[in-house]
Length: 602
Image (cartoon, rainbow, N blue to C red; front, side):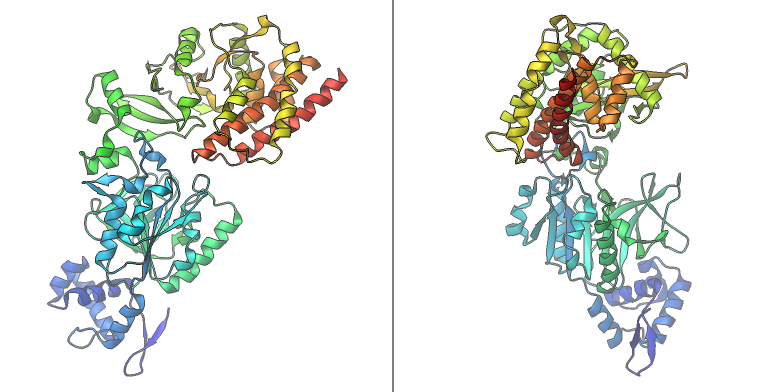
């Protein structure tokens, strides 16, 4: 605890939390009586009385409960200097709102969230404001001229969370408000005076919070299964506490293990936060992270106009407000999907991802579902729209995906896959790997690949086509899933309690050599060569001819280049896939060599 000198040279400690609250109330409103002070601070009269005595002993107030020069000096040293607004993320949990507007620019009561935050900061004299942007960063450019802010760009927003965003400007922290760009506060949460570092949480409890307020008004980590106080994300950090915070942030960022962590992780020491709690009523401050939160706050917001919700209401014959329990599911490589409830039943709606209209033929997809209907490969969609790409399916209880390291899972999945292949189903469209490689490349619009040796790698992969063509007879071709990866094999609980298995996401399916599905599973699981061979042996029950294994190696190389090109296209749209993209390109290079080596043995 820091020590300070009063006018009479006595040594005194800085005020405690409760004393600081009382001192701040005295500065703002002056002293009338202890009852009024109790109402203003929401502290008991007993606590107020004790705090006044302590403040007088510490030289912060005089015998008339007026602030001393020592108190004025304290306030001046703690006064807010600047603010950092974090607004770089995707806002994936806002589905089904189309991601054409960054979350910080969503309007509540006709006012963009971030503009309200900035105006509230200006009201208390904080004009030095830095906004960390990433997703659709250009949308924030107008704030430079209209609001006088500075923009800092996080170009890794797609693969790193806001710990990294704040890390970009950590040198600016010191008597600083740290503000998430997606909060709405009924009253101005900022002040001209602050006396301590705090972190804001709501009285509302939820099951996703990391922290709860204990009896001593400290912020402690929740235990497993415990509810926590809803984290608002708004904080004030004094210049003294900034030293420890930035040191902790640097350690977390440099470790490389916290890329997906929130900046609040740096506030913890052991099982509790190092800053004080600022507890607010449920409706005083709201972090808007979901569609339903926005709907609850402003039912007339233009951003609630969602074609997806309108479609659901039409399909089930209900009002849009009857579509509830909307929750984002894991973002897929191609689509965004969300869970919702209607009439007491749960469903999943798929919304095509960015640029998907150029990648997927939805009419072909609808044809595939018609072909496999009733064959036990997957549930029939409740609704599918070939034009928009919307698809609604029943939600499966207690679902899990295939564990690519679990041999029992692999055997079950390959058994289902082979059963499907052996049906020899036919459709009128095909999936041509080599044509798709060229097509995805064409979507780069003349820009060169990010890989310096791309042309050589591509030439090597294309040279494998002749071997594939010689190895595959016309009668071998059948309806092939193409995207038969681990995440699309769904284990679920059946009505009798047993475990069922389905193969989902058929949007790439078409006529092809079915052995392509083995290659696709391998590269998505990012298998090494030994694991690829294990999967081949499981599918063929240990009886795979060398010629076929060489052909599958060729497919691994070709499919690696295919999805590498696909990743390059998505990257241009601002969607990053990190290690996955790099590994796909490695598959193209490595398995070209493996295929050539095995061919030489034939």
